[in-house]
Amino acid sequence: MNMIVATRLTKRYDAYEAVRDLNLEIASGDMAAISGHSGAGKTTLLKLLGAVERPTSGGLIVNGQNLLALGRRALPYLRRSLGLVFQDQKLLFDRSALDNVRLPLDIIGLPPREASRRARAALDKVGLLEREKARPIALSGGEQQRLAIARAVVNRPTLLLADEPTANLDADAARQVLELFAAFNQVGVTVVIATHAPQTIPHPTRLIVLDHGRIAP
Image (cartoon, rainbow, N blue to C red; front, side, top):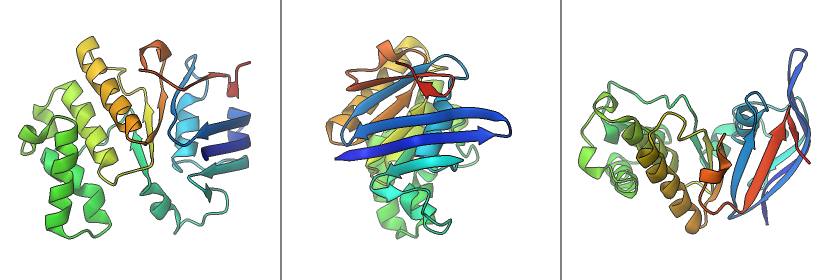
């Protein structure tokens, strides 16, 4: 079964095509690395897959949902099955680590006790349970990235998307973050990571190289 099916997918900003006529299939359970030069379209493709951006044309099915046919009211429900980790982590620096992870659960109205239980479980998975009361400013860069991952997986997504998740980390912190993605993949989560260094991704089942918005031959 395919988690992602893109058919002649195109995203245009004015006269610039960031993604052009792209055909792509990613199976459920894959761990895919998307690579390419700066400006190749990696971030745009992830935003399309995560329903953050709307395609200009073409077809896109994610987790069985036709994104072009979904109305705006349906998009939040789709996003509950997705975990998004982008370069701009959008952590709330005036709230604790626990509150940051709880936020998606609070938004959907989960009872506070259950939300806290699931948030602590997500923090535990990324090795931050002991820092649940700390605010993000008190965390290292690697810990902040792990906090962003905990928030992305607290809804138990079937698809996890990450844009250059190790770009600003030292080698040890980067290794820990990538090991987390591999661990989620091993329990059945489909993982798609955009990266300049695909050789660092542990055991990818797919390598997709973009060149000016197209998949390189």
